Length: 359
Image (cartoon, rainbow, N blue to C red; front, top):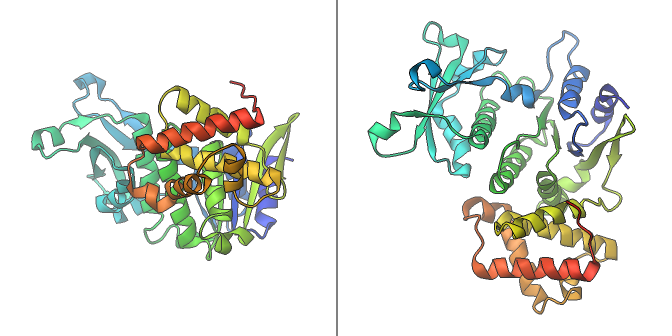
């Protein structure tokens, strides 16, 4: 299949929510563009709104090298969205950013000659009560930049005249490049909030190469506390490239065997002594996959099979720390007891089922 054919297939599908895991080099951005083309109105206007690599490319650093970075800033390229910038406030963006607990402040600067041209640049500074520090422009990290741009678009989705007019669908393509594990989980939470606010009014398509993001969203949509609302209107796919031919495969009707990829992530985190609450959420996905393979409904059974003494308590801890709202507000660092439980479960799981993990 071509990207255009896959776009047409997603368009024709009756699923309100489409979540697709895409292997590297399968062309997620090309699929997003193909879907945009497939859903255009007869007059050529767009029927939905999008977040993808082109969205991120609108933001370009001016390092002000001639002045040793004295006026370093993130510039915003002109686009069809510029006319909506004047409706966006700094507080709108801060409201979306606060879940990420940013360590930087920022200021939006409209074009002085004509504010209708939109935002000319964004300056960043250290979040500090010291006014001298707060005035010194800084360059934020790539991960922080990606978080800011994502939150900028989350705020822009809410201004009048754009997403409320182009209201057929959201297409969200991988807003997680350069993010660490903690922020992957927070981004999954913001996407789930977007789904909750809009699923009944428009289609929502999410594509990602990140197995953790896919795993967490798939769990919340099909097995979480609100699964009764979403699982019947959600379809999970794998976008793969087989001998040069793209395929969109349904992974809902059979066990989606990505557990080895998840185990690799968990093994790496443990080896680096950097295990966090996010990794417990991924461990839960592995346990649920094993439980599905064994034909049982609860991963507590798997904990019992691998020799965890108090399987009920361990299952409860994993469930609690995998919960969106708990993770959203608590620290991502595990207390020693939870970390020890993680290491014990992971070790016993690998020993019991003899998983072979390749780098």
